[in-house]
Image (tube, rainbow, N blue to C red):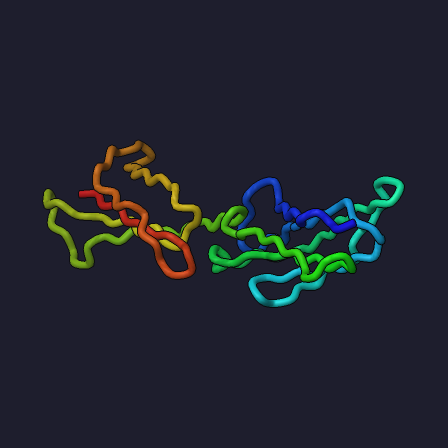
Length: 172
């Protein structure tokens, strides 16, 4: 009996760069019990623990394989894939999981005043640069002495390289 299409699941919540997170590949309904599993990040092979194969009926087996991956800041466009090989299959079955579903990249934040000295009672424009974050939903608040100031001038997030986002907010 052929194995079912593999199912790849990821961590239950988003994780930050530097965190190691599990991905699990499962398939079932196959016989005989010998089955091969390969993992890839994009096209690069990954090391995984020995798959767990369990008998699930008179003549069928289930398989579960888990791999750990340390997330990187530039993993937004990346994916992990599980490839299952079995004697009943003409070609391996493959399933992928987009890392953008689990990655959370916190922004770097920089406030820039105008470079020149400012006279008393003159208007100054401050710019808050919010860089290299993911996903795109972010809110910016300005505080003066701990009290929030209403600001209208916030750009929409724009895409940077590697799928990360940036935006700027100005305060006069």
